[in-house]
Length: 131
Image (cartoon, rainbow, N blue to C red; front, side):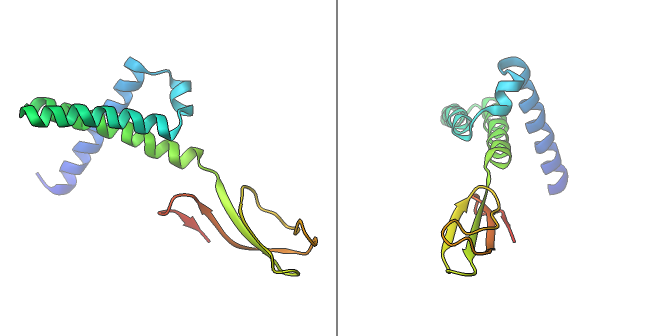
């Protein structure tokens, strides 16, 4: 099997486990609002189960726990993407003051009411920056 087909198979199994978890254990509305820390704790719990299965050498349990780790890891990633606000950095063109981590775009300097220039907008994730 090619690496691409193996990856596609893995992703399909992760998505199936995610759906199964939500149906069996979750509340769709609550799961959509669950904080990244909550998902991280679930990932950690299943990581412990995975390590136990590895220590026992139980291949079937290892495979099962890989998907039990990967599904909430996907949920964690999704919660980071959807719940982390964009943060804006601006500089006043009049007084030069820099304002970091504003959660919405600003046009006026709060100190001198001069025009603000956007320096950058970023999500607090190192891998995603918008110019």
